Length: 287
Image (cartoon, rainbow, N blue to C red; front, side, top):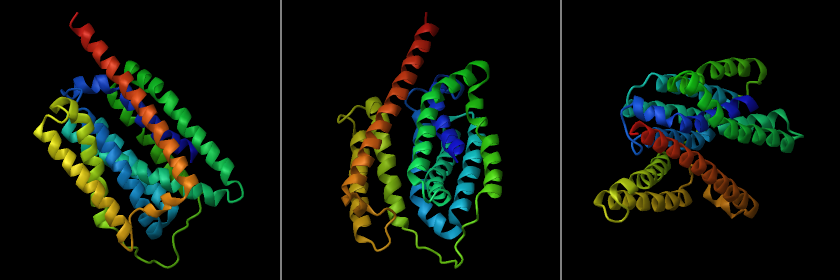
């Protein structure tokens, strides 16, 4: 479980190092390459939100295995892409698998170590953060000695291997009585709407011009509308996609805020480092 979660983090952080080669290979620019990143994040958010429904239907192990399969398929498809518009759907599938894995593995760990949940989560966190540290190094070595395609292709074999190991080592916890849970389709659509539109604003805003472009204003309006609509809908519906009232718990809200700040800083550093390497390589190409 630890290795699987570390692998997903390793893959996401290694992508930033391969960005320079991806821009050249996919014949795109520093703005549009972010669609591949955005697809991955959008898929991940959807996967996390859908885990509760998937677990209720198939159990934690089957949900975990489904996430592994989607991650492997998405990674293999991304390795075969030759354009951003084809890589983005592949990255959405890859991210969807990661979202299912990240949440379901926590449920599995709690069931495997009921008396030592703190220790289990501690080792889980160590694996995640070490992978984020070594991801750029591994990605750089893979790209230098191989190809950008291997940054994606190397994910598939270990994912499939862990899928088989989970079948052997993790108990089947499918519900005895199959009760079909209701899925908050409206909440899912609004969630993807505000995350996707926010990503467009942040990525394309500099290209269009912040607050000076009609395109930016339209997407900003979409973001504000869907974000407010999501919160209002989730607080009013009887079967919400995400229980927002849990944020009333101070310890939970504080921990989530700290995690959000850490993740924002980590991906900012990776993004800036990747952008610096892109500019450096472009500068050398014109010398």
